[in-house]
Figure 1 (tube, rainbow over the protein chains, first blue to last red):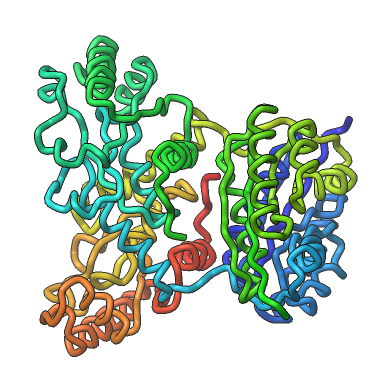
Figure 2: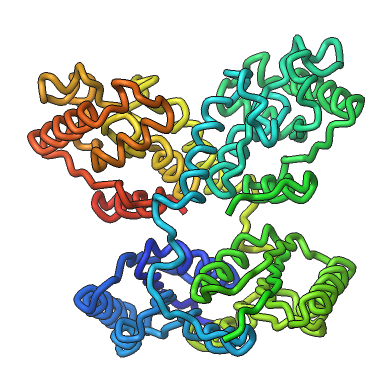
Length: 274
Length: 274
């Protein structure tokens, strides 16, 4: 089949993050299609909707193909303006709201911008608090607030603790500290004293030694820190320490921060705050 | 209309983050409906699909209503197992893939787990690099890597610089540093010397003084730092400094990090790396 070059628009009355996530995961199913992606957020009035429609029509002319449009517009007047363009429009509100109303047995409010609760909701403030907490309690920098931690990630340097802590905070509002197990800690193969009172909050991240060595090499090439021997020793010692102390742990080698964080929720039963 | 109590499932072969985002934004349109949300990620085989279907059926019995199920399963055998449950299933792959194939003129690959490119793709490594960059260059801690910055956020303390830098990094792979404008800097109403060579990368965040005072009070109650007088002075001085230096800025008072970050992309034309 001939390769198609297509323009894809993500149109929203808010940030467009939901429209884009929806569109991107659908488009991963189409390999070999060259796509130019255009994010068109904050389409809140008719003028902006007409601008977006004009852009879609320009792309249609340029490509010789109708653009693909993923829309999360709720306002039907604005949606109609987009639909009147040359684009092929996929709007998951208009596709799903009616059957969802039938299933729930309640009429939907058709209100705009609902999915973003703004910056003053308790839920949002809690997320920002959690981000600040993760930063202040990153990498063992401060250990005086561990009473407040919902989880404390432990593992060797560069096993994924910091990005996972931040993701847990930013997405789920969970207060996650993290503490690096160092070579000195490993020699005794017992949990560092400082962590012992918080054993029930500890969760380990481990990683394949070769992958760890590659990651460390990207930061400090050809150092002892990044050598495969040292990486193997550290991983083996930390895993032994975690097993001995019955601390649950997962392997982060092939996992993204999203996957690591979701796995942590499943294994710990930790509840998210959003 | 009678209030309904319903259970909502988010089912995915991956983390379920897309299924949940889709479901959550649809459900914001239904006010006054009491919902219990259950995330069921990593449904990768028939055994797990049957477990999920059993859980759905249990919830149906308990609620006396069929549960709502948002699914992003791509594998049709697994999806069929879920569909045979008592739940009302909304699967945006099965709803949109066929019309999307028609629009693009290419068959979809129907492959599983595609939306998560894993932890070794360049795009993913770039995101993690950007997170590390944001951390190392947070709050003016280090200014020696500003050549590498794609953007440097400036503003008063607690105007939203840190969470926005992290969000730009984690979601978009953008290297964002941030620098707090201090009282000493403000007295002269000129950009701190250290920032002057990077003027083209600077972007200001400002905030309503009362809101700033409330945020600061939550951290240091009744301090000079959080007093309304000082907050008003700081905000006025920083805005004057930014205007004088022709640095673009936005008001973060009512904006979430998602909204702030999207606004920054629009105003600067900065390209995301994903």
